[in-house]
Image 1 (cartoon, helix red, strand yellow):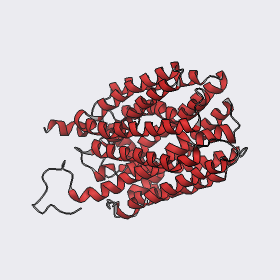
Image 2 (tube, helix red, strand yellow; image 1 turned 180 degrees about the vertical axis):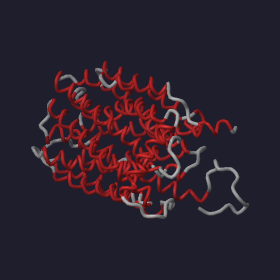
Image 3 (cartoon, helix red, strand yellow; image 1 turned 90 degrees about the vertical axis):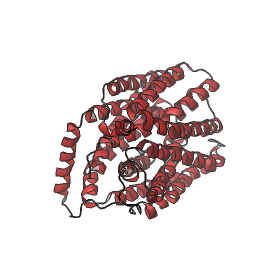
Image 4 (cartoon, helix red, strand yellow; image 1 turned 90 degrees about the horizontal axis):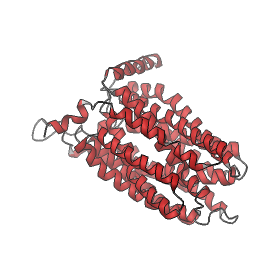
Length: 431
């Protein structure tokens, strides 16, 4: 970073102008990667897998849940040791780029998956999702580098907000390929949308490659044994931070509900409420807009009010969303509840990322965010399995969606008992 021409910067909470390009390149990765969860996990491939690849029915829900769970287990297994190595060898950016383009390649190959190719469809999706989730560990670890304690909520919100704009743009670009649904003549075009998502992801990751700077923290090249020792030390240090582990457990629980709602929302709309693919696309275009607005606006609230209180506010909203969705009988009501969910979608995750950043020990950002990621991904194992299992056993997706409520309630109660960190409240004390 450039030095202040007026002398030493005595205000560590002021965002330096020289960070602008790095903030933009960091946020652009959110813009790029949002195409994957929007089109592959939520809107298009999820429904295609259940209806075409797996042949529909409750078994399709279960297989989709299993695929998501295996992907998260893979990511949880590989990222903690790699994050320790990344911090010790200044390799966070290299791992980020590696996993991003593994996801891009696997996503492009989904375009070759046809009816009955259950194993191939699951395997490619697992590889793509595990790589996507692993890339986020290293991406999130740059948040403290491109922000200050006073602006961390705002910058995190910018990333999430720009991400929803990216998802929205990609939705518009592939809508002509998806609007025809699963008619025999349109299925090849439907599969081409997966290739388009891969191209979008790969193209808009380029600003991060060229402009995001990784500060060299450790000059010595450590062995893998040293990296594992550092990982254990980081866990011990995290346990010493008041409220850190309690927050991680709370995040484990409430994120379970968020991931499950995201992963099954399109399937629920098509299977239970009989939405057409064209209606699903229109629905999620509007959801992307509301999610972007929520991420941008509540990012400022996070800085003004604190991330913990902001998360609690969004969890109240999530409880309302689940209850109303259970009783919903019409498409118009589901549209309303989906827009309500969108307002909390990015903001709850953005504020969680900001709160986690306030707990991390210095010089161990990738390792600390790996623990944050582990909680998120392990919750992503449980939620889809619960939803898919309940749906398969009862044959009723309404009962399955209601089961998500417990994760929001218990996670919110635990977060309520979690103390604010000094970092997350320091800026308000300075006013």
